[in-house]
Each structure stands twice: as structure tokens, then as C-alpha cells.
View 1 (cartoon, one colour):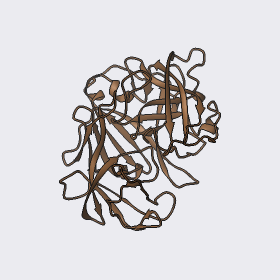
View 2 (spheres, one colour):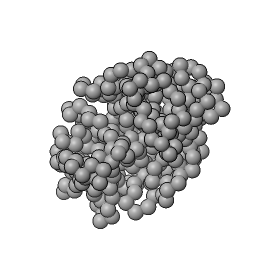
View 3 (cartoon, rainbow, N blue to C red):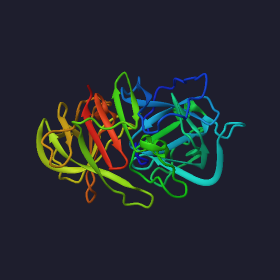
Length: 341
């Protein structure tokens, strides 16, 4: 879920883990370390979302949306980082994030520093996180509805854990993907394995030998190391010859395509025709690395928005991750897909 995308509502009853003691920061920083992920289905929309449980400072562990379409840990005010003895140290450095496509709401706050605790692993040093304590309406949505940022019910959760490699991660007010702050190989590469019943992220893990690699383009904004990769499109198993930019995004529940009129996917009433299998492959590849199937309901209808004079872009949503092992390599600038075994 890139910062310019809609956050879909999730179930209001969120699991909260409790650990008897803080996990250790010791061990070989080059050895793989596994962190469990949960996958929940929205009872109203039918969409899936991944969650990661994080303890921030001295606070009890809380679930956050696990989002490869953005970078940085963005924490809503309902998590209470400003509570006494929270263990977080907040600065006066302003930060903000805008959600929606087009922009629907902006959250504002400050950068805080805190040690993060996962199941079995803690960051050895404090990590910058964005603590969002107020909201405002952007010009594209001047009459937006401002939620109570200190209500977990109103905010539909405690925040977003941005696990992507793209996006601005350096500079005043920006926060990095927390995984990339870790020492050794754990801070360089990780794999994500998701299924509809759960999953895990393994820090420091190498990609499987048969992976299909998407090379990320160099970043174009200040503080951005990488930008979107390019993919070539398959329709029902056949190469179309059309190539476009792609966002691999666990934070989005439904795939979508922005078309400049050159993609040529089968459509009906602004959606990819039901039953169509869209395959995404690295350039020069003879077969798709991952596939999503268009349907007719909210959770699988793939909307096609015509946007002339802009580079076409596809967002695969979390659906492209199911039953795959997806490797994120920050050193080589690669996102790689392999079938799960």
C-alpha cells in the first residue's frame, strides 16, 4: 500500500500477542530469523490482509498491517507512544502520510525513536517510526471525514508496518523499513511466504534457486533508493507484448491497473473481464512469475482506470503473494518470486 493508496477496513477485533519476556537481540546477525505473520479476511469485503505483531519500546505487542507497498512503521495515536514510560522518545521532527488514490486523507505527527520487539527478535538499537496524532483533508477530498486518531475502532487498527524497498526512507520526517535497520544479512534480504491461513517473514534468508527476479529501477526522489520494477503482461498464459510498471503490495486487498490506453487487457465496464488470468513476468521471461484471476465480486474484481499521459502501472495486491516465496533483496535491488513448496 503505497502512501497514495486506500487503506481498506479490517476486522475491528484484532489479536494482541503477549510475550512473557522481551526477545533476545543476541545471535548471529547473518543467520535467518523467522517472524510469524497472520492473515485475516475482512468479513464484509472478503479481502485479505497480513498482520505483524510488534512491541514498541515498553508497550505491549500490537498488530500492524504488513505492507510491502510502503516503507516505514507508521503508528496511529491509538497505540499511545506518548504514554508515560512507553519507552519511545519522540522528537519535534514533523512527519505525514497521505492515503487514497487520489488522496483522501492525510495523517500528521512526529518522528519517534524506539526499540522494536518481534517474536524471537529485538532491534539492537532504537528505530525511527512515524507517530501520527492528527488528521486533515487534502485538496482532492476537502470534505473528508476526520476519524478519532486515538480510537482503535475508528482507525481500524494501530498502524502500518511498511516492509517495502521502494519509497522515500531518508531525510527529515521520513522513516525506513525497520528490517533494513538491522545489522548483518538480516538487514539486507528477507523472504515472505503467505497463504490464506498465515505465513512468515524470514530475515536474512536467500531467495530460492528457481526464483524469477524483478529488478527495481533507481529511485527518482530525494531519499528514495529504489522505485517500481517493470513487468511484462500475460493474459490467459499468453504474452501480450505489453510492459508496465508494477507494485507488489500486500497492503492492498484488490488488484488494479492504471492504463494509458496501451495495455489491451480484456475489459468489461471498466474491469478486467471475469475469468481472465493476468500473469506478471520480468522482461524477457517466457512465463509469468505470479498470476491473479479477475472475478466479479469486490475482493477479486480488477478495476482498470484509464490515465492518459502517465506510465501504466499495475498493483498486484496481496493475492499475488499467496502460495509464493517472495524475496526482497535490498543490496541487489531485486524482488523475486518462486513457487512455495
